[in-house]
Image (cartoon, rainbow, N blue to C red; front, side, top):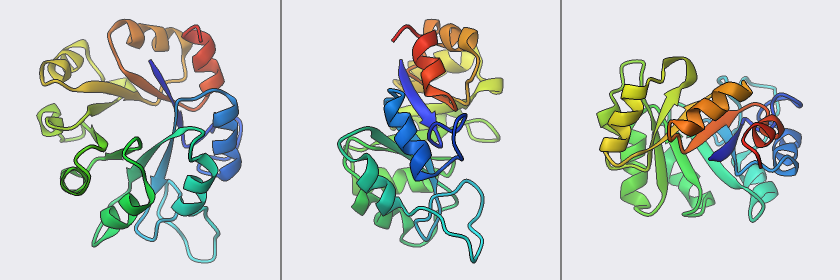
Length: 191
């Protein structure tokens, strides 16, 4: 099962920061997940003027060759998808709620994996043709996972911080979990 450090090792350090991403690498995560806005700033909430945020380019420089990147696009518009893809490798993953951004990613970079978040009005079927469906932990069901698998999709679940739940999801065939604590996940999953 893939351990995806949600906004870095955010249980230990401030989320979406270079130190949190560095710590995720140290803790043995397979991927870091990060949130990117249209100006390619890395932050979960909309960027505010006067604050410094890491840029996607800075995160790529820190992580390249050390850990995979799962880049969640936050309300992309204009040429955001294209600008993000210029910085990423085909081994990285694009994550988004917006189907249009997933489709544009697949058009521009057919080999790049995509995760379509589902729920909240987005059907699992909308993820078809991509790599995986992304389920919220509190809303994922056995039936939803079976539907994803029937459609040929992998399944990821966010955000899981309970060791027993991690093991339960692994046993249900989930491909990867987003967690704030990659060290806890490694211990819970036996690696």
